[in-house]
Amino acid sequence: MMDVQDILGNVPKDRFRSVINSLLNECFILKGVADTASDYRFIMANTETFETVLDLLGYDLIVRDDLGVITVNNPAGTGRVHFSKLESILALILRLLYIEKMKELSQSKEVIVLLEEIYEKYDMLKLGKLGKLQMLNSLRSFKRVNLIQNLDRLDTGNMDIRIQIYPSIMLALTASSLDDAYKLAQEKLNEFSKGGEDVDDADERSDEDID
Image (cartoon, rainbow, N blue to C red; front, side):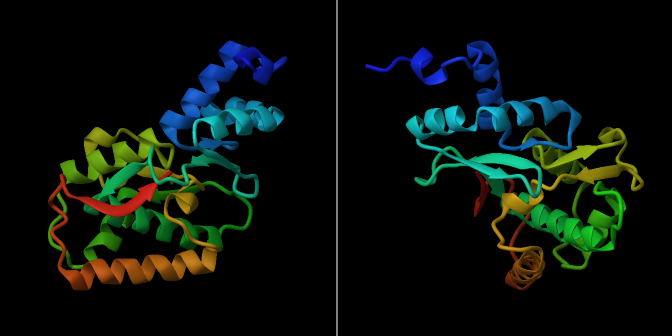
């Protein structure tokens, strides 16, 4: 019977354990982010080993080198982080902003928006007032799974807080291309707006999730 060391071969066991735990707990590993860049390189150098172990756990390894993002998918639909309705709306807004900014960028690939821009997109939906605590808690949730990074302190709640949106936002809610994602985000946001959903219900979970 094959044991763990047979699967790992020359791959350092402790390093492998650390990286695979980060991948499963944080959802996304990014090439262009200092905190995860070394993990990204380690996975790329040992892709076959990661695929084998993740397959035993019921996961598929998803490598999007064009985006510089590595994540996992569970075909059975388990082991996912579920968004509340409010978080789903804000994730779609972040993706929409990411797409818009990427179309404007010529050199830099870092997408940075102001908190004010997120509020402006939300207000367009006319879903009612979005409290500062709701917004900040949602942003902290996104940060934990490597969708964003705040460049200024969140607890100030200032409208000029800078938020870097990571390319992983394109994998958080499935879309086949930037154009398709742009259209999907607009349609979904319109659905939320017309449906009159109560986005203040933080306990109610939506069907949107991230792997």
